[in-house]
Length: 499
Image (cartoon, rainbow, N blue to C red; front, top):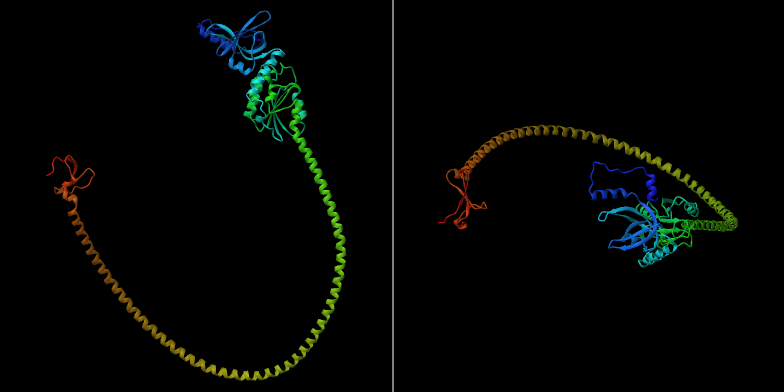
């Protein structure tokens, strides 16, 4: 929107209060504050170019000879990647500013775009050579895309069919797409594209690749993608960047700097989903191969079961015949064994009856002998227990007499203990009394011998500065400070002479 159109849309007019008086500098500053928001895009022809140390001054002229003084900082001009010449038609974007030292209105340009295919191609080739010399297009510095991209950052305009083309190429594979709306042509596009790339790098949130896309167009419409700022943003991106700008024949600086170039937005979507399509195909192939292998294994197992089944029946019939024959042989052997055992049992029964009769007769004879022996033992036992009772009675009487004598002796010993205990208490009392007197005497002796008493009697204790007691004049020199302790205090003295 031009400055004129902006003024037509605005009804607000700034009026300075009449009671205020401004200095020139204050009023120029006020003008610049009010002019700064009047940012505009102007088209014209460059005339009267003049360089200074920090800026390039030029004029922008219309066909009707209307002239606007302009400047662009050299650092900014260098970042735009173009070289201005007189007679060049350009579009510039910036804001008006009054230069205080000269009082001139100057339009400060932020963005300058040549008009016309020739000028744009020259600017394109110039920037391409500079970036190539700086290594922006080196293959060894380009980042590889992840084998299976899951999260994509799409940078393009929400208007148009670019988004739909990209999503169509991407297909339905569950990929997550984060969209950042930017202008893709015009002077404001450069700043928005750079901001989008920087935003994704500062807030990656799992984004694995950035897709910079737009539809086709003329070289002038693709100019934002041929700017140094966009090239630097792509080059500095930590996230791999895929470009999908214009048509396959359109090659921009952004395409050359990008890590991967797609011909159109739909191609970008297909490239990103290609690995998932191939993965699906590989899964289908593997599933088919696994099913075929399982089916063949089942067939082999079925054949093996049939083979083993037939062999099992044949082997089982043979084993059954052998088992029946072995069972018949064992049955005959068992019958013979039972017959022999039965005969032996009959022989043992006959011997048992014979031996039982002999044992019964011997038992009767032994029973009579045992009865006689029992009678004799009972008689002897009666005599023994009678004598034993007499002996026990005698022993009981002797024990009673011994207990009585022991009790008398214990009473006598108890009396002696009580008497000795009383004598011991009296002796201990006398010993403690004597010990107390001795301690009192020692305490009085210590008090008499103590240094405090000596000090009260007129004596003193002399010490050196370290607090050691002086015992000889050999340890003291003249002018030494000594301490003299008396009974009621300490004197600091200085040695004047030693005799």
